[in-house]
Length: 154
Ligand code: 4NP
Image (cartoon, rainbow, N blue to C red):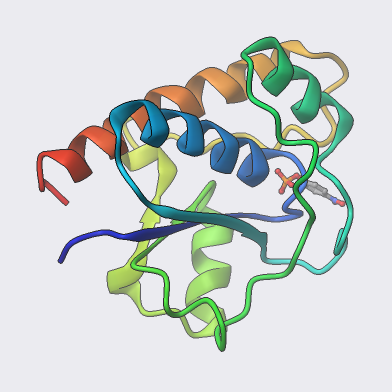
């Protein structure tokens, strides 16, 4: 199936998935690929909040502005229309299955060239290093993802 839309999902939708959305926007834009991109959380803890300070900062360092994004909760009613839904860790993945998303639409970010690693939850990290690590994992996986879409290997 051709991929036209991708939803990135983490727990809070304030640290990892908004950064994934911002990075994907930039990489898709550079590749000349038109995709509908969005992000959401499995929890509703941060609805309408901007991304966490440190994700905004790390994005900015890499010329990616995510400051205008707003947290929202994933919904099996409105988000089923995405062609691909990418979970940041295994808990997010199993929560999505539990919510009723079909396995065929789900993927783990770490399966795009990261050997199945989980994108670590950086919420309780004490400094920016963890966020830089998350950034580089996301950038590497999303580069692989976009290449696979362009080569129709997905
Ligand atoms: P995220 O990080 O899932 O990458 O957005 C978290 C954000 C908030 C919380 C946990 C993880 N929290 O417990 O509120």
